[in-house]
Image (cartoon, rainbow, N blue to C red):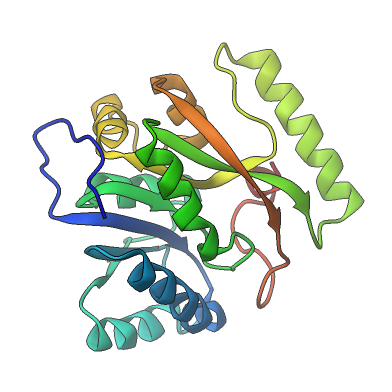
Length: 225
């Protein structure tokens, strides 16, 4: 796996980091890792998978620790209290050691199998490649209305253009990660921050699946965008 361009004082120690914010997701950890590890092994190169856990009342932490015993490339960050998905995601980005980093949810609505295509686009000279939803399976009419309203509000209040129908699922070079680090925003809205720092960006369209198990446990408004 060729290394993307790097920048800053934090030299990468692996080719690819995968940052996964989690909260009450014990049923999704094993199926997520089964698919993710298959993708990463086929992709080649060294990697790390960083779960960033808001303290959960279920067995999410125990399940992840069991997986770490199996494979030390799996890592876990546990917060002292619930800080929410944006903070969990930013913590993973600030701690990751990869020359490039993927951010993805654990519920398998965003398919790990799309990562090779995202990475291919990154190697074509882009600094950020985000996944753009062509469809949103399993979403209610209300959720779609909330999504449209949310993007309208953001467009009215912000000078930064945030691409529609995107989530946090994306890949970024080390250069972008270092710029995010320099912003010193531990509670930031990732989509807005990545748009703010600029650089050459593009997207790959995909069909978004339904959740593998259960329902989303993070902020419903942010998750609806």
